[in-house]
Length: 541
Image 1 (cartoon, one colour):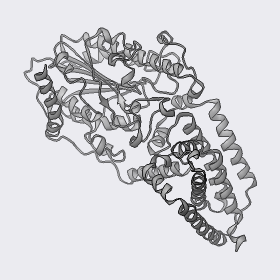
Image 2 (image 1 turned 90 degrees about the vertical axis):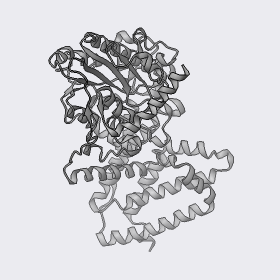
Image 3 (image 1 turned 30 degrees about the vertical axis):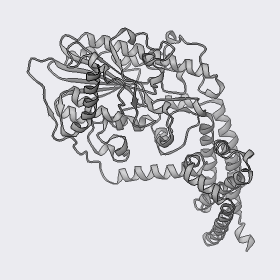
Image 4 (image 1 turned 45 degrees about the horizontal axis):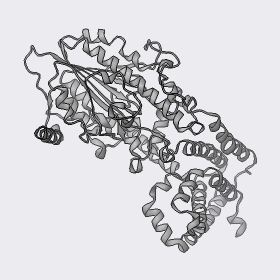
């Protein structure tokens, strides 16, 4: 009986699981110890948790391994677990469904920014070398019937052992599962496996039937006023990874907005993002669903606000210096400015200011049309912040000049990040300068809003993409501002009354509708709260 239970396959699966638990779960153990300090008599409980997760990993891998493919499954898990261990350790990130989606959408340049010597060492030491050993030394598979019997017996033993581990620590496990759910997000490889299954399920669901785009705001009606009124010319800048607290317009100690400070801009100080990653925030902010109703699997089955505006005759152009529009602009004119053949302002990488080149001609080619131009920035995309700005914008020094943020001081990381904000300030000022050329012929305005924020080492976290459930404010409190031309329907002084209003990405849909004077019942309730706040501020003034 013992020989059947401890078959070669079962032993190899157990060995790999113990190896991963012992060497690739540093982030999980570190956070576990922070919640249950050993000094408070939790040593046995901590040991129980580690053993429980090792057994859970064994149980999971056991039923993923079959026949000749078993060695390849174990080898693959060693490689993927080593990469997960690196990113969780280096940046404090969680490998959830959103992060895996981001990985699939990452281009070569972004992937290159993440590569480092430390990553290579993790990959070699915890991934490739152990994987090579498994592929080389693991014995041949037994017959399928024998294997299934052995797996079943071993699984029953594992389940019994897991119950025996939990029983002596019932109260601690109750708090672990109820109050500290976020700890499980760092369990390697169980949580990223769960996330991968969810992602694969969503992709499979989306491929079963062709997507039918359903109309939204079907009662939308353009109220354009007299024919002689100037047409709207709006530039919407979708920022990347810009925190509100790093704009000197919002009181930050370093002068990161010297150019915008010269303009009559209104900084919206209290804007919250829809997500903590571009893959979520960008499609969410343009959708009608809002954060609470957002579903990444179905969002592209519905029109977004750009579709509605185009339906009402607004001429729209999307220019992208980021990875892409995340599905928002698939039905719209789209230009990829990550390509040096298109973007004339490229050095070590293509710059955001290149997206302004040729816009004047584009505007003049559409007389008598309402125009919306969306510029999707590279902005502050990390971790290589030092690459996000030209050399002349390196004003805050010393600077972190590596993507291995753990090797830099807090000062160096913050300086590199702030220099990138400084370049965004210049880019936005140049955008305003372009709009001023059409200030007499159009109702001009610029709206800037970042897709999400960034952790810069606070609470041991770096970058972004944390599950929204426990995401820090650094990843959700985003920079946003407005500039209005002289012909615009509202005056900057009016907007200053609502600059501290708690806006969210949910408000973008109806804000754009209002800007282009497109009326719809879907926006009546959404805008009423802001109007009420505005009226109260007017009375108080």
